[in-house]
Length: 204
Length: 204
DNA sequence: AAGATATTGAACACTGTGTTCACTAATTAT
DNA sequence: ATAATTAGTGAACACAGTGTTCAATATCTT
Image (cartoon, rainbow over all chains, first blue to last red; front, side, top):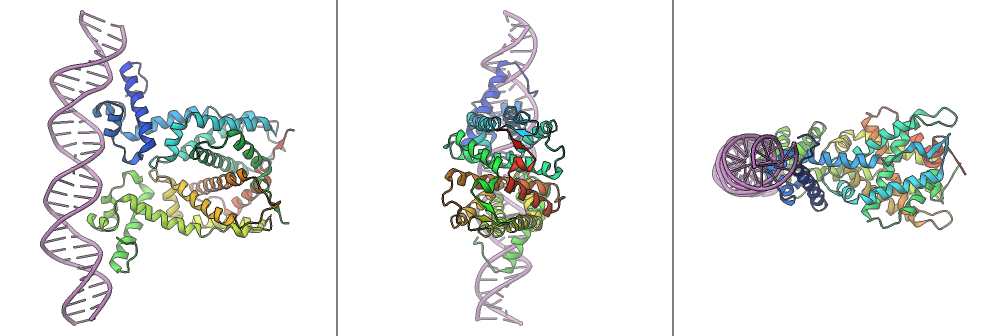
């Protein structure tokens, strides 16, 4: 049951299971997927499935974990700031790289975002982003030295929720709009704020 | 099976089912909930459940629909703007009222946000917000007359994702922080933008 | 080539589903 | 109040999916 094994048969079987699983998730809700479905799509015996995973939830767990750790490595908030100044080119470059990563792994993310039965994927993904962010943000030199602690707590949640929502929308639209375009608008929202980005001013 | 019925027995039974259901969702994943669990918590026969709902998914559907339509009525974006100007007091008042609504219906929202097995709740809720927003935003008078269409598409998604994320975080923290405090920070983000809200400036 | 290990497929008990049916209880209409 | 109507009960049933076991077979490793 150990996740590592060099036996060819094991590797082939697991790859077949995971690939068949992702394919099935494009068409059919995770809720109604049966082990029989997965086994026959992967062309293995039903009993064989149980030699590798306790149940379909563990399989999902493994697939998610793999997908998320690959994703999180693209994320280095620390690089986008220098001495309390944001570096615009790096920020837009980062936003674009995020979108490209999602495009490259669209099969995985479409399954995760849009399959009706996947539990808590957004939350899990967000948690991973937040953890990484927290770890890196402590090393940041802040302007003025002191920052409002509540703002420091709220903002990462605000931003990660917003970004995950946007990426999900973009995938849902089949990546219709070039990532450069989207990234540019996001940058505007970041720098000017949502209201001004739409052209609003404020009443005194 | 019609959703409306004035028969006392029917109303009592349905109320018992829905309340037991929400209670169970606080402790146990929707995935592993059985009709038997629900029936015995609601103190009805298992067969009786099927007189009212096709399966547990339809029950969930009904409960969600009820919760969301009550929520969406608290939302009147149209009121927060006047002739291309945002009205600060109204915006903060609105943000606070959102948080209060979630506090008042915490049993429902905790189940929906944090129960492992609820499928796609965030997405569904977001869609309802977006639809309402779209319907109202057309009536808005925009500054300069013309607005970047892509920005107009992206921003509602950005904001609704962010807000849903924040509310969910706030509930998860057991509403530790007064809604006035949170609303004030959100207002800052809206007006100054995320980066400036943290005190960053920009390199040319 | 021999030994080790993974896969197979059939069988098994078990749990939950969704339906039916005759019976009883509660509600509504007269 | 009583009759007519409708809802709830509880037991039985067939069915589908689960997770396990076991001897036989296939495939890898050394």
